[in-house]
Image (cartoon, rainbow, N blue to C red; front, side, top):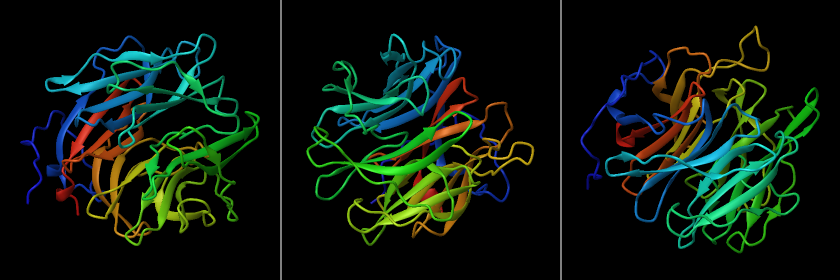
Length: 351
């Protein structure tokens, strides 16, 4: 039975990069800016969610610049006529806020996790909840010591009801710091959390900001950003309690955030920058193009679509991706550090 997709409307001319999925422009249903007239000069690190009534909502941080005390967490819902005016829903009097993550667990309030602190080495985790789809929010609650919550990408709910939050750490000094992954679990719907051990990395991959996928045989897989020019992966066969050592996928990574989702048909979808390090900036590279790739097994990936390819100063970064109940794929991402863009795809057009 066909999925109830709307008629295709291309609201933005999307440049395509030959050889990186340029054959599927019909997959793009809509592309629009969430915050066309923001009250801040910079926006970054969006997150996207489907609410129980099928409304799509998004959040991100915005202010005068990343790491500055005026940076707040913003939130908007997409109504029938378009995105509503964003509102600030979380801020701190002394420190900047960072990396919001929206999470709508079944039968529970909407959760918004975020970080507060002077920098990613010294920040702490916070959470607010909304019983009415983001119209009203609870007072902020600090997560327990040692628990940061999901660092960039959405938690998943396992078959036994466990909440699994993909987390990571940055430790050390600005001049010499180390990255590593760890998972955080809650078996009581977020009332208490347990932080797992550091995921081993014997080949020297330093990773942060993982996403969690479910493979066809029930194995969990993660994909994550690294400093080493590739996307990292790991596997868990015990519900996320233990994870295999990190390995590299054949996907480039310019030291930039990614996100991924398991589609209803069992395929895995990742949104990422198909670029690696620039020789002039070892450890970093351009955050363009922005691409979509698919996998049947979480190991072998094929690029199927280019969302953005035109070089701009701050690129196209920090994607977030979900599949809504009607089958559509929703992606939000930073556009040149000034706007948040929302793209809707028909995954049936992706091969």
